[in-house]
Image (cartoon, rainbow, N blue to C red; front, top):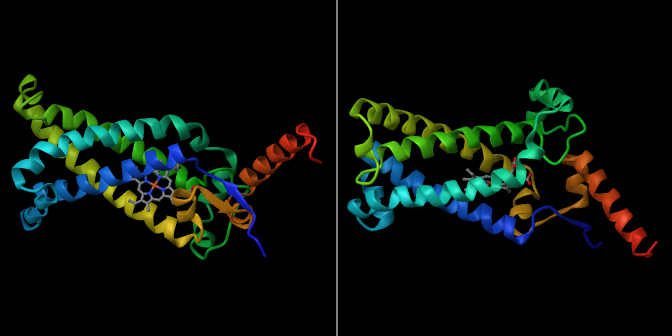
Amino acid sequence: MKEKLIQRYNKAERVNHWIVAGCFVLLAISGLAFFYPAFFWLTGVFGTPQLARIIHPFVGVVMFLGFFIQFFRYWKYNLMEKEDVKWLTSVGQILKGEEVGDTGKYNAGQKIMFWLMTVCMLTLLATGFIAWRPYFADMFPIPLIRIALLLHAVSALVLIAGIIVHVYAAIWIKGTIRAMVEGVVTQAWAKAHHPRWYREIMAKKKAKDEAAGRL
Ligand code: HEM
């Protein structure tokens, strides 16, 4: 039987997401290389340690700008609602793979992840700017640069841990990766994991079909 598909992300959204994800991987590898001597060899990701030191902040700016666009695309779907309390208080059931509550486009876990990403991105940008030699660091006192570097490392580690969960969840719920690769999900996926979003999409589709006189 032919699968019934629903569009979840258009091409621009997918290209945007994978640019951010690609930058994140390069930044995480080169950042860990600067942070832990045992990982220093990973600076090779940008050719040489010197090049890694020069390129890392520029890639950081690209990641931030990419995420900035994502933020404005998705913030309204990530606002917490009453229904999210049910999801959050049923973590045991969720971990068993059961679905809880009348979830919209994103569930409460995805929403928390979205806001965590946002806080980390803003912290990484602000602290990275303060510590960026040779362009901006001279404008700030050394104690402030030290605090900025500490916060930069902490927010990077939190973001890396968050993205590991984000990727795990995307693989764990079958059919989710396809949403960000091909842009589509099956109707069964939508009905099971995001029932309110499914009803909204189907209602819109019905209204469009009726307006076009196809029903
Ligand atoms: C590196 C591997 C990554 C994979 C495999 C991955 C996978 C996915 C998938 C499958 C979705 C769709 C989820 C859904 O529609 O329910 C998604 C959404 C999203 N991803 Fe990623 N992602 C990755 C990295 C990142 C990174 C590094 C960021 C930003 C820091 C990011 C930010 C987002 C955002 C903002 C959404 C929309 C979800 C929301 O607004 O709550 N992703 N990702």
